[in-house]
Length: 283
Image 1 (cartoon, one colour):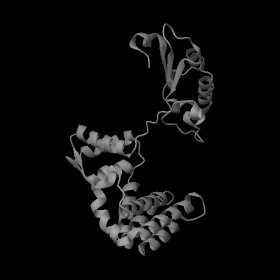
Image 2 (cartoon, rainbow, N blue to C red; image 1 turned 60 degrees about the vertical axis):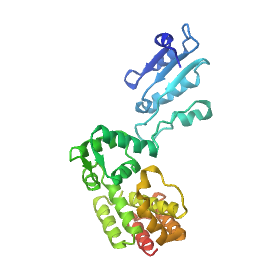
Image 3 (cartoon, rainbow, N blue to C red; image 1 turned 90 degrees about the vertical axis):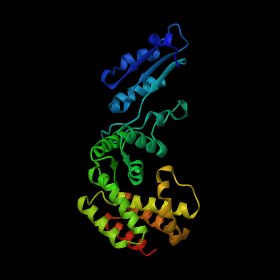
Image 4 (cartoon, one colour; image 1 turned 30 degrees about the horizontal axis):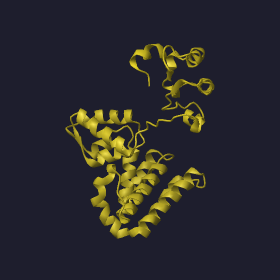
């Protein structure tokens, strides 16, 4: 955006530690010096208080033509209600660059981290970490811990050592249920509810919906995402057994249960999971 010779005189960077509204506004309003434009970069704005974020947005709205203000707004630190992102506020009036990693990028990050740590991992380990909602820093922390256990990371090690064990157990529940092992699925669900009675239902139903969705994709001949293609061989017989109608029915059951919980229609999440499990076991 700025040639090297112009950069030193026309580039300013601000961070939360050095945030000063007056200095930021002065930089944004400043005239370019022997250049066509000025560039001002405000980093890590998610760490600012809500009042300071509003001030930044007021400054951004008044940026003069020819000057470019870059707002780095990756993760908003929650203090009460989560504020709107600058991208939402700007709408079509600004260029938005979304750096959130997609599924392929998460798989690539995990594989590159494993190579850097000089270890390998079972495909199920890679798939579980790629499908999780953990940020990449947490994923790397988990892998660094697991790399200390041996040259190959197993799913059992992941389940025992990762920071959050609910997700792997939820996938075990879903796999057991679609395979027709309803009793095993109920036992896994009961174990999770014993650990955390308030938060266990959502991961269980989310995993079940995702599992039925994968089967439905296989039934219809769709192409699986890279992170789950290794499961195609195991999903194929399940797809043949269930067929499109029952796979879709299982998906709808899980989604309906999920909706009942998050919308407050159900008072007891555990009862919802047990009812969904019982119905899905009949498919």
